[in-house]
Amino acid sequence: MSVWIIAGNLLAIALGFLIAYQAFRGYRRNQSTPMLYLSVGFALISVGGVLDCSLFDLVHGVVPLPGIVRTALVLAGMALISYSLYV
Image (cartoon, rainbow, N blue to C red; front, top):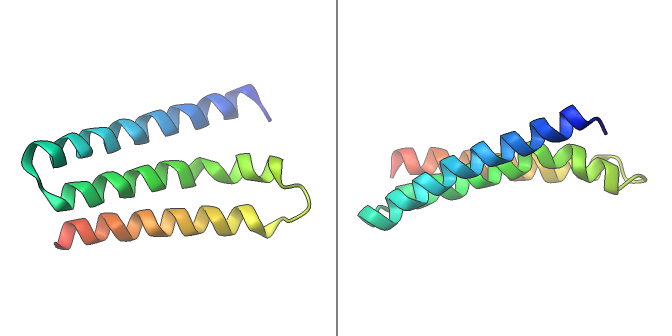
């Protein structure tokens, strides 16, 4: 895997977790449940967004597995973010 791809993935994870951390701080400060859902949603999307490349390198034989895991994490994250907007 290219060094630039790894650097980009690490930057995406860092920014996603920064957003998730700020949302979690908002949850703790205001005891706002939607902020907790927003925080968890961004964390799942951050991990799921870059996990596809990493899992593909680890699991050589089973090609659909990384895509399924990535899609499930991103879908769960989007669902939590959507839920936080309507609660």
